[in-house]
Image 1: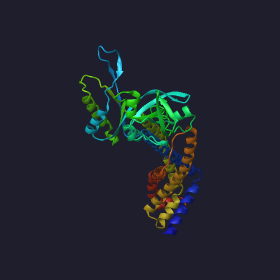
Image 2: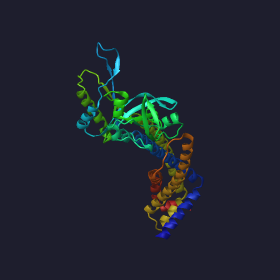
Image 3: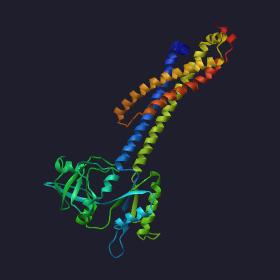
Length: 408
């Protein structure tokens, strides 16, 4: 069996070698199609990984409930004002009545002047609970995080972003430093790891986090909240959870049917959906290009196989005259087509890999290759050989030996 296989492989390689330039052209066209397919898969995998990294940075399955704009009551003032009715009690009701909610992180925020020695700047100050850091995937690079004891004790402690450290302390550690926030002294107990720009275009490192109760009583002196960050257990339940939360809050705030919401519900993954649409468009264009190139490669395999059969008609007749069966002839030419296509596929993987390196340097696109990105192109190349080599091979098996031997 081994000797027979070696003989068949030798015959196939000799046949492809004899085909010369046309075999090279077919191999090249298949290789270009496979390279295009590999690059397309790498683009798709890279886009998925980039999307996952963004989701991991922002936090999973999140939406925000923000205090909305309401009309001032007659006789008190004129115009629109930010509602002050979003409170901690809303969190309790939502947890009890909205299925699928994992965590709700309350936030009280505003802009304050922050001072360290002679350096001063204005930044966002957020009163938060420990849950906020968990759901938003903030990591403390140095020092410690905020805990529940800080919140209950209304401790004047703070976490600072890396941008704050650069602006106020030339990038050096601020652990143990005393900063003044709106005229109130705070001890820096932790420094956050850099996160960069969020999908909304905000600098994630330009902020100071303090305990929520400290913010309420020592800095803002209010009993309401700015936002609620809500995490659900399943992305598929996001829409339902938002709608149910809206109904619960309207009921809790005693809003009539014809009254506008005094809060806003914002989907924090909307920007990621836009990125996903752009990525899908890019993949679609890549797939179209790969399909066209693969079709050209398949046509090359078809042409080479057909011409090989035409040139080797006497050989086919001789083999059939000495006992070769029709299925043996068909299998021989299908195997040759598959070998030609597979060699093109291997060449395509090499070209695709080089193309990925060039594109990555030239465009800084995220591209990644996994086992699927290597296996699928090879399987496609074999499928091309089968699909485009089967027709000529069947035609070759139907050659009449007597007519074929006339050309000898």
